[in-house]
Image 1 (cartoon, rainbow, N blue to C red):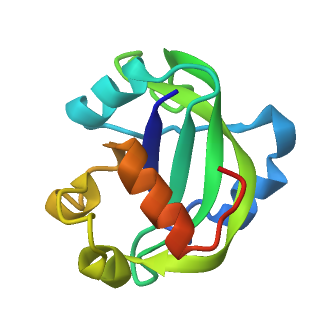
Image 2 (cartoon, helix red, strand yellow):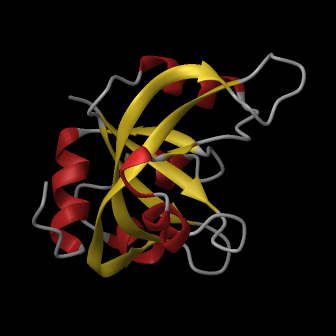
Length: 140
């Protein structure tokens, strides 16, 4: 299993929206970056991701699971872009801020720290464990 981080602006698509989608999940649509697309092509069913609110909040707020592998993005009329579908697994009891991640030991090389603009990014198993521990998430 691989681990990922999915970034979204909460005023566009929030953790509450993801939870509301239920077990059917939701397309992680609108991604128009080649590197983020490459990461989605590498995703497999069951992979887990950190759900990150960007913008003013800048924090990990929950965990999602990939429920559909790469397929055409329904929001792209050109047919060029693809997406995966994810479902909510569980919320973080305590959101983990970007500032806490930057200050966290063992997280200096995390893609979020080095390239915070990338909307879909890989997370190592060690980073996953550290961030989940920081947020009090026990489901992983």
